[in-house]
Image (cartoon, rainbow, N blue to C red):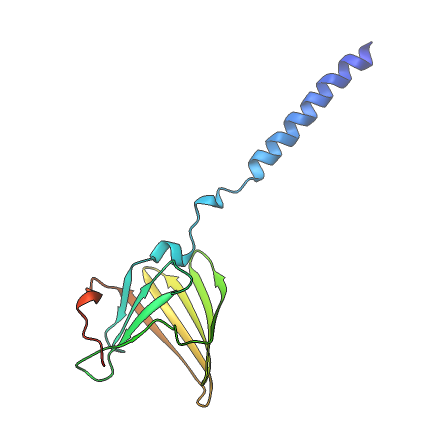
Length: 149
């Protein structure tokens, strides 16, 4: 009879221990957002390079860019002309995409660091090059930007 009484508390204690470990090992990462989710709809710029970027949470149009190379208007790009866009990583502070176009491929890494976004681009194709620019938050109204024809 003594053994039966001792077995029940040990079973309950074991179940309680397993439940406690299970609850403690549950991650609260459900609240963690990806870079695209966090910055969806936000506008970033690099004045020196003449680049403005807006992130989207819609994976069909991950981002939009406006590049001012001519001085009076912006070249607008949504990467819709790309043959494919592969998202390799979309974590809390990093987005890594590969854009395949007729002329080659670009690997673009966006990394959020202290309220800035580092953009590292590696182009492989006819002309291969790599460069990095830093984007800062912007309040530019993209609706009024003059887009080149």
